[in-house]
Image (tube, rainbow over all chains, first blue to last red; front, side, top):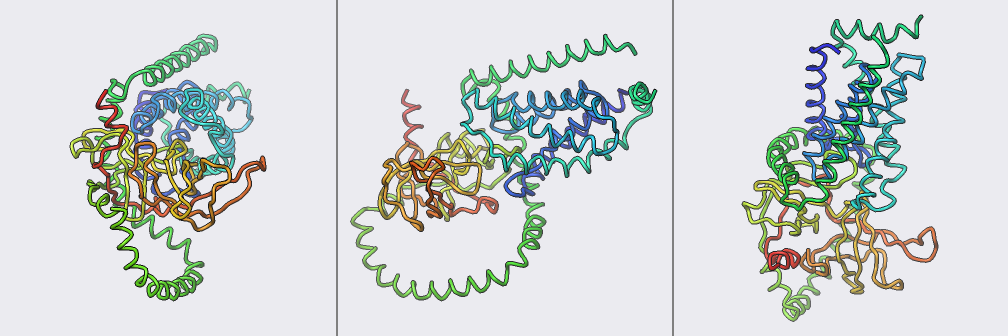
Length: 175
Length: 285
């Protein structure tokens, strides 16, 4: 990943965090809001690789943990693992269309939410059942809507060095 | 690029991230409320509180506009319903006048008015809401510098909003009664049956009566009982909206609709006197 892309992604995760904190709570539907930081982390994992996604998930999750009165480190852990998994899973799909991140975001939103709440249950911070199926579904759908905007946006800012590495990474498949 | 070193590097980075997260979680859970990680959280809450308030003000008109557009089709029906309600209220107003005199006597008898006069409150603006989906919390722009302490009750003129769970110097975090970790000691205003009001991360609360055969009816008003040492008694919470059997069929499920519209909250009052019993006990230790 180029230095420019790194700086760009760092700015993106900070912006996502600010939007998550300030704008998203104003636009709750059915009592839930999209998780922009998770969506950004998964998109980065798809476009740049699992570790890059995990780092973005970790940074964004830690910012979210610091800025909310919850057990610090839980969001960072769940988002980092979800993004890493996205980066690993993307290689099993033979497509680079927007369907890939849509599918991954939908699946991994479930994973991240269950992991997050599961850790809180283990720590005694949450009671069973920690989450309703309806809420899980609503958040995952909301995240899918968010990825339709975020994925093309982040794709537009692929810097020259990134283009090369992306082609190399995809080269095996095309060969 | 050779694949093996990259895979090994990926693994190492992932393991480092997991170790850092687990270490932070462990430290956070084990430290006290005044520990370094909690202090960092409180510092950031103080920092983001004004930003949150600014965004709340900017987006409130847009949000209200969007909500109104969605509600347009139901407005005419609502208007007819409201007209009916106005007629009913007019009739009730006449009845209420007769009851007022009797009520005054009863209030004096119970010294209710004296208790209310003892409540000292601090007004605060809503500065932000929980950034995730699993907590029903709000950040207010007043903290320990205004006399706010942990576990103090937060109200509006409509009823109970929640309680303070974290205090910074210029901001505090309020756990709403709808939060799934919230449990408030309550009683039925008419039957005086007591129990616990649990949040469910939804707009509806769940009342768990102390007795299985508790006398609870739809429409009953629920208020704080004062048990539990957080909220003073007599603060209204909501009305019983539904009674149904649990899936097990053994016990009843009592659903309560809160009076407070949490999505439209702008300002709240924090009850600083009398102090919650839990605070007094903690300070005495």
